[in-house]
Every structure is written in C-alpha cells, then in structure tokens.
Length: 291
Image (cartoon, rainbow, N blue to C red):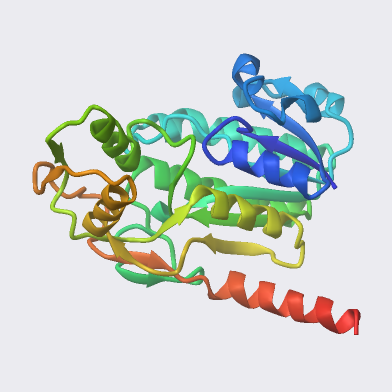
C-alpha cells in the first residue's frame, strides 16, 4: 500500500513508519522538521515532506501522489490536555486537512483519537460507550471524529478511529511520567515526587501500539471505533516501581506530592474485544484459506 503518515517523527509516528516499511509498504511521511526526520534510519526509504497541518491546500495534497490510506498521528500541544489551543487551533486545522484528503480521493482514513473522549467514566471502557469529554484535548478529538462521521455521509470513505490509551517507550515526551522518572534515576536523585499512585490506568508499550495501528490500516474491514490499549489495568505506583526495578535502581517515592488529576477518574482501562476478536478471526480465515 501507499500510505501517508502525518506526525511521522512523533512519539508514535517514528515507530509506525518503521513497521510500515518493514511490512513492505511505501510511505510518504509528513512532519514539520526535516532535520529531525533525518535522524531516523528510515528517512532515506520514505518520501518526506516538511509540512504544517494548518497550511494544507488541495495542490499540496495532489503533489503527494496517489495514496491508498492515511495514518493521521499529528497533533501538537501535548501533554497539556486542558489548553484551549486544542479547540481553537488544532480542531479546525485538522478538520480541514482531513477534509482536503478525502476530497482529493484518499478513501481510507485512520485517525488516532484518545481515551480522554470517554470523559469521567470508570471501569472497563468499550467503544460503544457514549463520549463525554471534559478536557479541551478530549473535546477537540471527539468533535473531529463527529465532523468526519458527518463528512462520511456526504463523501463516503472508510474511517478508522483508533483511541489510544496510555503509552510509554522510546521517544516519549520528556514531561511524561516515565521519562521524568528515568531522568531522576540518571541524576541519582534520592526521591521522586509523584501523586499517590493508586489510580488505575491502561498502559501499552508504544511499539505494540504502533504494531496494532499498522494492523488496523492493513484491515479495511475493521472500521469505526477501535480501542488501542492493553485491556488490563495497573496502578501508577506499580508501574513506577516496576520501572525502577527494571533499571536495577533505588529511589524513594514521594507519594502524594502531586494531587490526582481532576479530569481523570481514579480507575479506568480499555476493552480490547473488538480488536482482538477481529484479529483472531482474520488469522483463522487466513489459516483456512491455506489448508
């Protein structure tokens, strides 16, 4: 497939591009900073365009050539989930960008959404739950999804909305929990300030999230909403303690230094039934076709 990847140099994008190339796809990569893109070993094997999502026009899309699908990962302003910037800038810019792609003939659109679309719901979150976001980021993503679903009724195309939960791994924003912990360990600090750590979250390695996104784009039958998550919960404290043990280090956790975020419930995780059921049936069908 010819696949356009936006946010190609980002936390998720760098891993998605590598996997797509490994699986034999042709990748056109979009990101704002080409100098950053040149630091990745995949750079010589992609068609790269330095581009800002907010400056898209039909002529630019046509210059990209034929694309079978887009994996839209670009989104700025994270991890500041509450900033109005997401609604005032990101939402209209990304809606226009994706609208132009559809108008110019891209028939398969995979967009990464967020578990923040579910709002303050606790427990296991399945795709059929109504959304009720409370953060600007969650509201912007949810509004983008609703707008694309409306566009589908005017110009039919395949929409795959992949809701990401919590990811960790290489390339993560330095202000995120695990990178901050790693920095503290590298500086041999005696204590690490964090929340009480009892909140339950759904964490997935970014490499596994990238693998699932690639599988989704390769599976046009898997349409609509798809949770990209582990399907299990772990306390933030247990996650931190496991990371410290993995590093063979020792540090005192200053629990309760930060308050729990008011925009997240204390315990939630994702339901992976839709994704795993489809992948299992797809594997069974492939096995049957070869026997």
